[in-house]
Structures are given as structure tokens and as C-alpha cells.
Length: 296
Image (cartoon, rainbow, N blue to C red; front, side, top):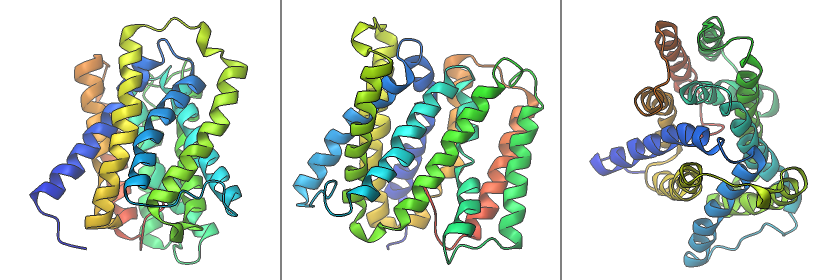
């Protein structure tokens, strides 16, 4: 992989801005859309550029091949469930808080990797990073202005969504030789298969009357924050490699806090800023001592 140049760094920052901005758009979308429907529409718009990409590059989509059970399970754990849980959680907590809680994915991923992989065992420095990172999360829960008896359950639901990303990442490692574009597209197709009947059965989206604001945010989530962002991620992975791409984890919560404060007028306390710093330090220590990455 080549050394990153100015354009590569620009793409990495752009990816962080897009993913960091997704949380306040999820918040706005939840004003009108139920969580499963929100996740479904996101995935529909994301699947279109992925399928086109595979067609252009003549990549066979193996969603219904002999490995279909793996693709289905990853689609459920890595897309359908976390997308839905994040929407549920973000509906009742600040958008920047969701970004910060979701940034703990590398921490939970490292714990899971210790038990379910052979080459990503926890050492002293990783354990220190995990402890520091989750200390930052615990410090957030002590801030009653941000997390209180009215919304702490939704904060926990958001963390659960982050954990499912980690589970999905572990499962993806088992079929990583199947190609990044194929795996992402195949699992996305399966997430559609799970989300569509669930949305019809439990939410009846055709009866909703969404606002223009929420609809625009949902379109942004599907087209830009999911579909376009995944294409940028593919480009970074192919040119600069996985280690460079995972640096985006440090930037996402920072941009999440920025957008939440300036665009959503969300209250930020001194505890939030301290927690953000502690979480980023923990992530840095863990990632610096990882051989690879469980989930970007």
C-alpha cells in the first residue's frame, strides 16, 4: 500500500465528516420515521451503489451462494440489528452522545476478538486501552445533564448497537477472503431481506406522514452516509490499506460532537469533553496495539 498523500488524507477526513454527521441526521429522521423503517430505507439506498460497483468491476455477488448462511448472519448482526438499535437509541439521546458511544466499537471488538480469534489476544496495553476507553464512557453516565433516568436505557441500547457491529466484524473475518465488495454487497442484500418484512409487520411505513426535514435527513443517510461513504471506504482500503482507514475512528466522535453542538444546539458539558478525550485515548492505545482491525 502506498504512503498516504494529501488527497488520501482528504478522503479520510471526508469519510469522518460524513459518518460523524450521520448521527444528527439519524436524530432528525427519527422525528418522523420508525427505527426499522429508517434502517430499511438507509440500506435500500446503500445497496444501489454497491450493486452498481460490483457490476462495473465484474464482481460476482455471492449472497445466495453456498455461503449464504454466513452472509445472512453478518447482514443481520452487522447491518440490520445495529442500524435499528442506533435509530432507537438516538431518538432519545443527544446525537453527539450517540457518536461517542458508537466510537467504542473498537473497544468491544477487541474484547470479542480475544475470545473468538487466534491472533488478536488482549495484552497489557490493550487491556489498559479498553479500561481507559470504558472509563470515559462510565464518566459520561455520571453526567446527569446528558444521561439520566429518562434516557439511560437508550444510551445502553446505543452501546448494544455498537457491540453488534463488533460481533458482525468478528463474523466477517471468517469470510474475508471472499472480497470486500462482494461481502459488503451480499450482507447488505440480506439485511434488506430481514428489514423489509419487519418494517411491514411492525411499523406499516405506508401509513406514516413524514416531514420534509426528516425525509431529507433519511435520504442523506442512505445515499451519502451509507452508500457514498462505503464507496469512499472501498477506495481508501484498496489504495492505503486497513490500518490507515481505521484512523477514522478517532475523528468520528469529534465531528459528532461538533455537529451536535453547532447544528442541533445540543448541550455540551465539561464532563462530555473530558469523556471524549478519555475515550479517544483509549481507542488510540487499543488500535496502536492491534495487529489488524475488527471493524472500521
